[in-house]
Structure formats: C-alpha cells, structure tokens
Image (cartoon, rainbow, N blue to C red; front, side, top):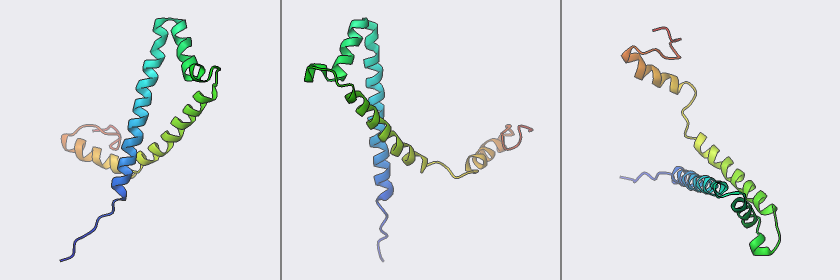
Length: 116
C-alpha cells in the first residue's frame, strides 16, 4: 500500500494569508492608537508626526518614511486579498447554499426572487 502525498502548497498559502492578515491587523491597531494621540492635544499629535518622520532619529524630517510605510501596507494588502479570494466559493455556490438552507424552511431568498 502506497502512502498518498498531499501538496503542501495550500498550507503555505494559508500560512501566508494568516501572516499577512496578522501584520495588517497590527497595523490597524497601531494606526488607531497613534491617531488617538490627538486626544492629548495638537502638540502630542505633532510629536507623533515628528517621531514617524524620523525627526528624533535623524535630526530632520523625512516624510518619505511614512510614504514607504504606506506603500508597504498597500503592497501587503494586494497579495493578502488574492490569497483570500482563492478561498471564495465559485459563482452560484452561495445561491445554491442559500437555497439549501432557506429553501427547507420556506424562507425567502434572492434566488427565489423573494417570492416565497
């Protein structure tokens, strides 16, 4: 009896989707917390801006740092979206599923034209 070998590609794609989702989630949490610095006044917000532009590290502002971070987040979002789309059901599957779930109970569905 031969052992069947399964491809590891789906597992790696799931891992990459999870890792990119974690990074995007951490970005969102950080963004919300850093934007909340406005609650401490305009000076706190300005100091946050100076920090992210590298003023305290380089002695002058470098707004390109923020632009590079934005480009990185966008570049991370694109593959994350494609990795998530590969798991979406084929066209018509959601309608068939709603018919199975809702059809047995007599509920109205978009596929039935909301006519039941």
